[in-house]
Length: 636
Image (cartoon, one colour):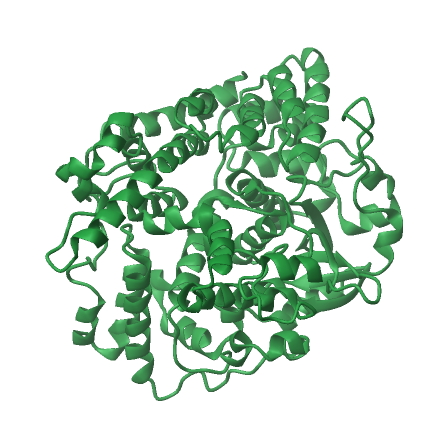
């Protein structure tokens, strides 16, 4: 490993070691606790109520989800009730008015003009706060080995003076590398486009690493709707999301994808687009029109990030940027239109894969591209425009979007035939509303079984409050406990979830552990309800233990400690009785080896990947083989 990598790893090790000293610290740095909750906000002036409500969202502790939503919702509505002018300049975006009737007839659309807040608005505010925190941290980070292929390609172009400056901690190593590879991005003394592209690459890679890839479901057919919808009464010919049938890109909200750390490739795209919105880089989902009669609105392809006058391409299914002709460069849409061979290179030969694997898009698909604007329904609403205007200083959040202005940006890109508002954020709301309705109203055993299958991988996290607190700390980048501020880190939480078999077996008799898990019997709780809660928590503990081992590896990776990452990944099998994580391990082991400069070992792991990430992993294997061949000549 070269000196630069060792230096960066050293910094991460010191930070991580400091966190290990603080594992037993309590957690509560929020200015509003569960005892002194948002009911107290009514004592504040109208102007203070919004800021105090946001403080509840900014807090580290997480409480029961319905309670969290109710308290945030009541705080927001107390604030808005005292406003004389609730975003009177709000207008429905033209792009939103052009959505199909399948969406405009639904509740989420009809609430855009509403001045009142809704319970799920708390989730949206949490989502935006997370995206802001992640974007600020990751975009300004100076860790380069997450982009090893780009950086090593740049090193071959660098002179001795440049290499020396990198060793002495360049302000932004990745930007310096990109500038060497793609000097056309520099305009005189202005290298702002270089910096934006570097930040975009970092945010894309964070999205890929932190949203482990699930198989992307096909668009539901009539038969699928009949057999899997949570409302068997619906018309199977209807719009699939509104029937309560899971599908591509709309099964989970972005806040859920961040909480659970998993999603299909379009849900990865939602996270990436949301992060880029925080740094003012517009990202479109490029899509290909479907044939007449097809129930899908279009076929989504990849993400295009607009920097300057070009759209740079990032494929969330492969987990890779599309590379240009120059080694290590990021291709633009104009590049692939001029040279479709760039897409052909993304196919795999029989020698590389078990059988020839073609890339899913061809030259002919590039003739009629649709640019889809990624805008959650809340971002287009009057109430969020009002809230955004009421937040000042460190409380400011970018809660709204102007899809019409973004559309004009996309229309200026050669190769874009039309621009639409992406259905998926609205469709997620339609789908989730139908699921929530079925949970409350349906007593049909078949529907309950379908709900259990759908929600099995979510419910244990939603109910396990401490796990959600750990995820909150992780997404906030809190990896060190702080004695002075009484702050507990994500690392500390995950360690506390490494339950022994004896602890799991004894949970119904261990009062101390019950209190730590928040399931002690209250005076107003029946014995049967409490017992059911204990049994459910016992079932969750084994699953949470396995997840904690995986997320401890991710904590290590975020702190530039690839060797510690590998140790945790190798230990997961000791905690993961159900082998839930086994299919994902080769990809993450490959990333850790790659970041350590061990290209041969990385290539081996990528070759063993059988997950939804496989195509991208085999392309990474190709990259690792190239780096391994170049290593002796480059002296690294």
